[in-house]
Image 1 (cartoon, rainbow, N blue to C red):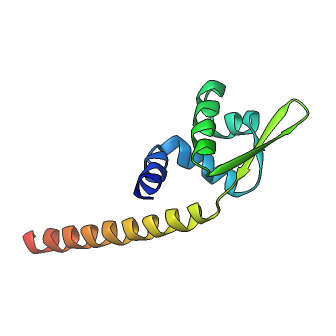
Image 2 (cartoon, rainbow, N blue to C red; image 1 turned 90 degrees about the vertical axis):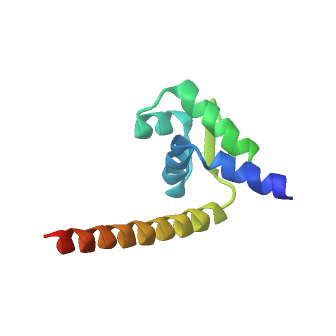
Length: 106
């Protein structure tokens, strides 16, 4: 079980994959739509979609010649939200501490 959890975290450790998930949060998209939205190359997007698919985070279906991708596990957004909130809180505290030290030095 721990290996599966670690695998998910490794999968989410790539910024482009997070950007892909962010795009898919709004709804299903084709590879071409993701390429356009993310201004990235098709081979790169396809590679990362494959990794996200293998990890179970996205699903895919064929529609004619196009492969349509969508979120397979919406819990990923709750996880991302928790991490973002925590990082925002940490950054704010660091800024306030820095700001406080700056005022003391003046």
